[in-house]
Length: 269
Image 1 (cartoon, helix red, strand yellow):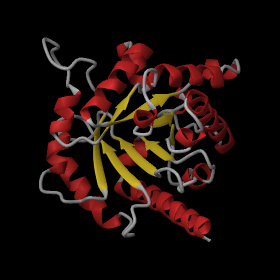
Image 2 (image 1 turned 90 degrees about the vertical axis):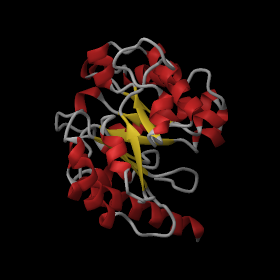
Image 3 (image 1 turned 30 degrees about the vertical axis):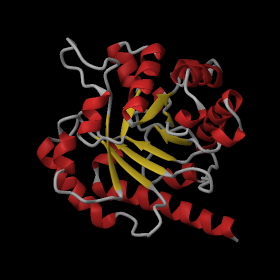
């Protein structure tokens, strides 16, 4: 991690788990376990199903924790039954929103063009997108990973200016490692995250590229997070199953915060 230029982030993706009534209790249990540094060394985000967000936020003044959604509509309003707009998310306190998750792409046929539209809608509403990219096992075996992920990144951020891309977070999630218990090796993950930063550098410049936080997702857990986070282009994690357990999530948050704090101290010297 290099925290001189960008945020360290641990984002939990609850997917379709828990009940709304459980979300507030989870937040209250997590609060005392969060880093207590006066300087925010790790941004902590919980991406919940829509109905949970107002409940988790209600009555909580925890400034060390941001709430996010797991998807957003590509439309502003209208006859789109079941859809939730960026303005609606902003109104209930969302600061972040996942877009382009492989499960949305696979089960709902979400295209790269739709991902790009959603990124623009979120930024217009003042919400930071967490843009998911990643290859299938077949693509990796055919050595297409870097080319495929580069295309996804370029498509997702098309039309964004330098100030807008700095508000985005990119999450590399190899499809073959999501919810399978399999994890890309730290070197594999680092290679792709470095490639993502190179794509951003080619589209903008080095200063913009080094300001964008890039996360690793795909079965990150307490046992492998330290090695993954030791890589300079991996700035945190988008955590699935392990984010449902307070102790596991707190461990990874503090491991990220400790690493970031240590690096900051080193750079200050």
